[in-house]
Image (tube, rainbow, N blue to C red):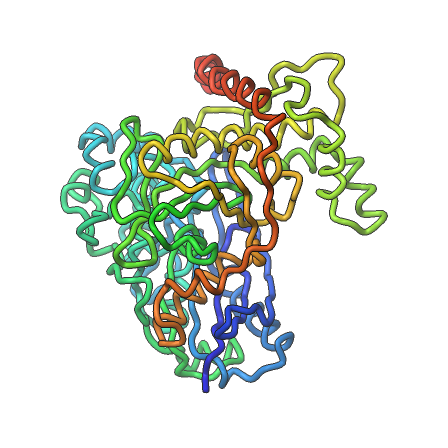
Amino acid sequence: MKELILAHDIGTTGNKATLYDPEGELLASSFSPYPTYYPEVNWAEQNPEDWWIAVCSSTVELLKRAKISSDKIACISFSGQMMGCLPVDKKGIPLRRAIIWADQRGENQARIFRDKIEEKEVYRITGHRISSTYSACKIMWVRENEPDVFKNTFKILHAKDYIIFKLTGKMLTDYSDASGMNLFDLKRKTWSEAILKATKIPQEILPEPHSSLEIAGELTLRSAKEMKLLPGIPVVIGGGDGPCASVGAGVVDEGDCYNYLGSSSWIAITSREPVYDTNMRTFTFHHVAPDKFMPAGTMQTAGGSYQWLKENICKLETKIAKEVDIDPYKILDLKVNSSSPGSNNLLFLPYLMGERSPHWNPKARGAFIGLTITHKREDIIRSVLEGVAFNLKIILDILKKQIPLGHEMRVIGGLARSLTFCQILSDVYNKRISRPHLVEEATSLGAAITGGVAVGVFKDLGVAKKLVKLKVTNEPRPECREKYDSLYRVFKKAYSALSPIYEELADIR
């Protein structure tokens, strides 16, 4: 019987192919990287052909590692980076590199967008404020700056949607990916006529939205040959990486919450209705469950800040780690633990690529505040992790005002491997931090469960509660509470105080 599920997670740094059995056990995985291009400040692009090469090569490598034949695969399912813009022609050929989620070039388009329709109305319809982060402004930018590309555009696709087209010949998307475009009516599950009129984006270039649990089509003979698979395997639509991660973290019931910790980071909850913040600091995606939503807040550079620290300030630690063949982040964690909670009153503002939640300011910049001659290297390192935690706590505080949350926060993503950072989060959030056994594969596990439900391997998404096993927990330490609460108050004030400075810096050419 075909019970194995092949899931692809098309991320920011590469594609991860994973193979799961009906018990949710990871049988094998393979990762194929690809580059991101930064032609200008706040621009970020990827070559869709790199996505396809990565999907094919990782699939071939996966089958070798798993030592199984493809006749045991029940379906192929997907999760993928969201909020992108890939124009393709009628044959599905990309007309330019994909503009990915991190790109914020469309600030002028966002201003035009706001002039045409009330932003609060857009927030009510789509669950999102108007932002250059989302696909709408990116599409408008292409129309205004690359008219020949726009004229020949047949559809705008996301990363996973492009790969699904390559596999099946079908151009479509799912509700969760559609909900990250600033164009989608969350409750009606269709493109908003009012917003399309305001942005002058023709509906015909947008892919038809479907449930994440639907089968897009079958694997074609041509694609099967490239992937070393059998043709005819059902290809399930799947969802955006955030909503899939919800399932992979076991966050499928109302009030459940999780924290993804990767290059960017978000806190998300499961709810039966969209959650609206008066100041529009948080947003709501559609869940992969067709009757649920995923209110969330996302910051730009969480793990990205730690990576920046490693590559630019901690070159010595990185060199030593390479010489002794260990993960450099393990050395950084040791440094963190040799500093005291609060980093001796040193604050780090983690705004290295502008910021989304809670400030929605692409001009925001990073800063160390309170640096003195008595501070040591380990204080600087620890302050980076604490700055990320403080910024995430602002998002958490906003969400918990709207919907009751439990005492537990589940963490997933690469940075969740750091028990040191998990303890900092526990202390700052004043919540139990629980880490599932699959922290880096949670997104692909969510895609696999979604695919399994679509083809009948699983009854429904509720099976995630059984399949997701918790491995490690951190409890908040009472002795850290007063220190972190005090620094948190100063952290919030620091952004407000520096906000005018960010504007002045942005004007200097």
